[in-house]
Length: 457
Ligand code: PHE
Image 1 (cartoon, rainbow, N blue to C red):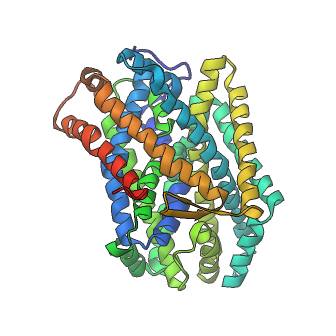
Image 2: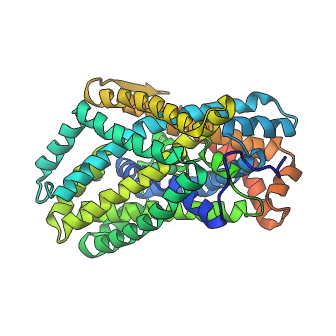
Image 3: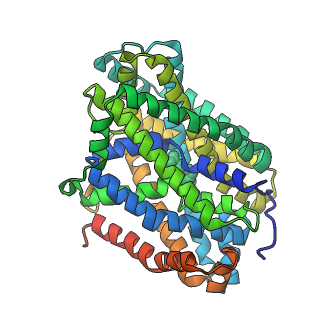
């Protein structure tokens, strides 16, 4: 079975897989979410736990997820099904594929709304209307945008169309092409911005904030947030890496490429955090401002710095590119499933997926402006609003559970021989280490963090 090629095509080279997978992992998670959740959770200790989650949970699961995808060579639901059949296991494992598709749809729905904010800010930056903006001015611009459903809807629609356009062109002409053009530009822009923040911002304070650990600030909620973010930022637990694995030609090392992509994502997240906090602290702005952090604080900071308008534009362009290549990966599991299941063409499948996520996105838009409520999860996680419900449901619940399923499946259900075969038959020390981690450490870590978050341990 492992010799077959996916009907959707395959990556034309190792580099293309690395670029596409990096496009998927590097996204709003690194540039928007990581800084604000680090700010909300007090910095250092949170970052350390997050790094541990990446190393012990996220990256090992990424390898397992790519592996299951390459063995199944289909959309996640069908890959789960066929690899489970090969292992003589219950076809109920495909439920994990379904849960992942649902998570992808939900994440895409709000991801596109936030990407819409970045498009709106990009236009403002280009027009120069954010120059010399005051703190009050910046927060009122942000509030006005978030409370304006029509404007949000317009940007949400534009972003969704951009995403669907790429996905409908297929693996080689769409996914690969976007990654080939956007990823090098994105990395270049990031380096320029870090150099700028280094020279103009307060790098020392940003460094201290991110790396001086104060464990008294680490709540059970922060633990689950760190774990959930490790999944979110690595795009694992919902099938995106599985479908990217399904397009991976034989003979390319899953271990090396996954570790490379995981490290790149980690470095980008840390660099983005350092750059953003340098700029924030240089202007004595608050770090714990929540989802509005980069939108409310950075324009003030950029507006007062030499060359700020240029670098501000570069920053929001970086965000748009990063969001774009990630949104593509959010759509692909469902599009590939639709094509396989219904035999419809990719363009139609992409349009239907886009419309579903677009409709769901309207819920996020309305919840930002008109419905607000509070809720708590296990008495510990107290959050507000529907946007938070969707975020917690996906990042903190479905992705970790999906990841747990992947770890258990690769570690305990698939035969060791099949797993080794996907590692090019090499069962050396690296393989043994990974196999131990995925069987014992990863599942236990995920379960423990869950139990801690709901107050059981
Ligand atoms: N990893 C992306 C980010 O950090 C989000 C994402 C999650 C993309 C799941 C694909 C699948 O923004």
